[in-house]
Amino acid sequence: MPPDHAQMDGMRNMNDSSRMHERMNGAHMREMMSDSAHMAQMRSQLGLTDAQMQQVHNIVQRACTAAQPHMALAMQAHQAATQALEGDNPNLDHFEDQLENAAKHMVAAQVEMAKGMIEARKSLTPAQRQKLDQMHKQMMAREGMEHLP
Image (tube, rainbow, N blue to C red; front, side, top):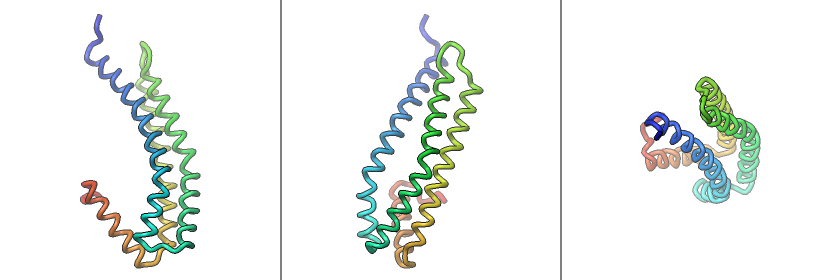
């Protein structure tokens, strides 16, 4: 007997979850590889000194180190959520609990990164902070997010 539409959607969602997990890992790797290019761009556009570059690098490293355990726990919870839908008796309550757990850890990771951004911003001169704000607005406009807070 062929699967009904609801079963097909569920299978697609599980596959989408696995692909999302793979994409998140791939995105993390691309992000790490582009960090040096991003830092070079920041140095160039903001006119960062060697001392500022070292300070920002150290801050980013600390923030990433603080965020990493939360990212790992988020990925584990997301995987557990996906597994809750497997088999003949999917457990939607466990699925929801695990997604909430994953979201909690993603928020914690983002907070750690935001702390680092705030700290790094303090190492900039007022003119550099102003330029950084302009760069951010331009990036948001390019990505179609200029109306978001």
